[in-house]
Image 1 (cartoon, helix red, strand yellow):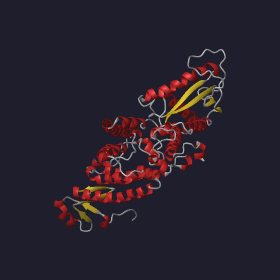
Image 2: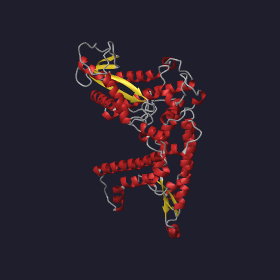
Image 3: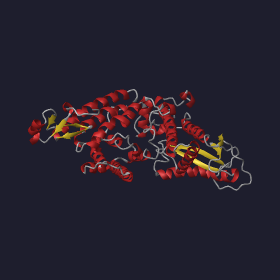
Amino acid sequence: MYGYHPKPSKTWLIVKPELYDVAKRLFPDIQVTKRGHRYLGSYIGTEEGLADYVDSEIKEWKKDITGLAEIASSEPQLAYSAFVFGTSKRWNFLARTTPGISTLLYKLEYHIKDTFLPVILGKLFIPDHLRNIFSLPARMGGLGITNICETADLEYKHSTMATKNLVDAIYQQSNTYSPDEDHHRETAAKIRSSREEFFKQRKEKLVSELSNPVCRQLELISEKGASCWLTSLPLKEYGFLLNKQEFQDALALRYNLVLSTLDRHKQCICGQPNTVDHCLICKLGGYVSLRHDSLKKTTALLLEQVCKDVVDEPGLLNVTTEQLPRGTNIEDGARLDTSVRGFWTPLDRAFTDIRVLHPQAPSNRNKSLKQMYRSHENEKKNAYNQRVIKVEKATFTPLVFSTTGGMGEECTAFLKHLAEKISTKTGQRYCEVIAFIRRRIRFDLLKTCLISGCVATEGKRQQKPQQLLN
């Protein structure tokens, strides 16, 4: 006969303590236990047996985390990706399949906090408030390194919701099981909503306990697209790979922490105190222009895929007898960043002009995010919009980005339309195209901001940007 036949030596029978002796007599050839045993990655048995099993699993996981910490000393981005997308799924699976283990996982949480997190950040110690922030999803300003002690019960609840129909069919001893796709989609939506609400409440509680500057920074890094560099795989082909200093400095910029080498130069070469915020707004050396030019080049490369006549820094027609509003730039030889044909409407020209702002600059610090982006968009439009419309007979779109990865409403609409055109032309799914565009732009922003911070900490602002890039 062919097929799989259970072997007594590999078969375990789990019974209640009072039935142990009877079971041993009735089934002498198989393994009988009253304590419990591992089953399909979970555990069935007594609380004492479960505690011992979880403890043995934690010992193995701690070895893996220690190994990742060793890798993180030279490749923190790779270690972070391996942890978030791989290693952490092991205890998440146990939490989803085993009830009541949240209090048994504290040793694992302590090891993550004391061993892994300090290495990827390049710090000696992680305060509790930062650990709480890191436990949030990346889209909410965290690192996606959840505290499993807090989420274990929620994961088990979601697992029971997802498998309820299958469990009911097993209890009823049904001969067949036909999955209900509509019910599955509805359940998946409920689980997503439940998880979103859980982390939203966690974030609200954190915000109520944090200082105003930290809350402001958390709001900035929670903007759409601001965290996509964290959730991207470190692929060198697309420029998504960072070295150890870049990754640690990127995390320092993300949470407005002191850069590792900032103490070497207390004062910028311009004479101002050398802080992280000053690094990103100091105009000495041309590093503010470097951010602008990098985004201009990337935007032009994306536009060339779907538009004709892409021109870098096109000159505007001179103003003659046209009546333009006060505040409009009417100088001869005025230029914008890019012009293309066929973006909004066929054959018509569309002009864009890029601005990269720093949200923590004194001029922006006290504004809401919406007011901040709107004020910079309006400043650009007041200077160029009517001139482009009346003289060039074209359209004008200000593309306003922030150093933390956010963008204004008009920039968002522009990139969405660009993604639609690329999707239509190439046949790729829109969601994949817009995700790639956001990642490409975000990494450009990130790397140019890191150059500004690195230059400040090493005291090299007198060098030209191209010298450092070379």
